[in-house]
Each structure stands twice: as structure tokens, then as C-alpha cells.
Length: 212
Image (cartoon, rainbow, N blue to C red; front, top):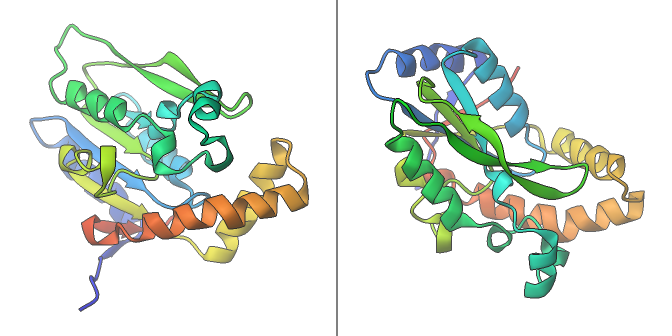
């Protein structure tokens, strides 16, 4: 039997945030989806609704550095699950679960302009009642990513038309220096296999979300 995941419209998603903020404990929400789905956009829209009570933690900050990817022979498939520090991301979530009232926890940020992560770029403040973790592999049930999903209170999957996602990805790759042919080759050989892997995690998802 196919696993059926209920869908939230954007207004319904906004209403659900209110239930999170009404809780006594901090809520960790995971936003996942394939490359180009609009994870960062949705996360930013949700966070802006409660900017003083929520913060975003991007999984992309745990990209391995380019020099390390080259050493491991993985530079040609950057973005695959084993091109991130999954243990590091899990450790961050564990720290955020037990953050002290007088503690600031620092998270890394990925800078697309240089294609590298920057350590300590995002301060996470203790008063944040809602942490929005966004990234591709938060629901992946394998390797270093397996312990991540149980640390999140809910997992939402960003639903988007495949043709729209393809055009977004194409524009992004070309914006950051790839030719049309190089961008299409990268998408076919790297982004789309990753997208199929991410889609396979739907049985662990609580809700799909549309942004209209």
C-alpha cells in the first residue's frame, strides 16, 4: 500500500506554527525537499512570521569543504548524502534540544558565491521557541543521517511542480557560473539522482507543503 502524506497549504502551515509556539518546550521543525524545491524560500517565509521567536538552521552549512571533497574523490557529486558532515548536523540538533538560557549556539552557513561553508556564521539564541532546520536529507534513513529525523518534532516536504523545479535549478547553476550544457549535465547526473533519493524518504514525512 502506498504511503499517503497529508498536504498543508501555506495558510494551514502558518496555523500549525501557532500550535508549535504554544508549546512549553522548543519545537524543531524539519523542512526537506529535492534540489530546487524551494526549501529555503518556505523556511524564510515561515520564519518571517515569527522573527523574534524562530530561527533557521540550514543543513547546507555542513557541506564538506571543497578541498576535503577533492581528497575523498567526491567533488564530482557534491550534494550527495556523503558530501556532508551528517554527524556534525546531528550534534547541532542535539545541542539545540538542550540549549541553556544563557547560551548562544553557533551554526555554520553555506555561501553559494564561494561554494564553501563558513563556520560560526549563524548565532542561535536561547529565546528561539521554533527552530526550522532545512535541508535535503533530514528524513534519510541511512548512514550518518539515520539519527537526524528522530531529533525533529515534525518533517515537512516541500511539494513543487517538477518543471518549475528544473527551471529554478537551471537558473541557479547558470547564475553561479555553469554553462547551459554543464548545468544540464550536473542536474541529470547529480541533482536528479539526489532528488529521487529524497523522494524515497516520504514515508517518514508528516506533511507535504505547497507554497501557493
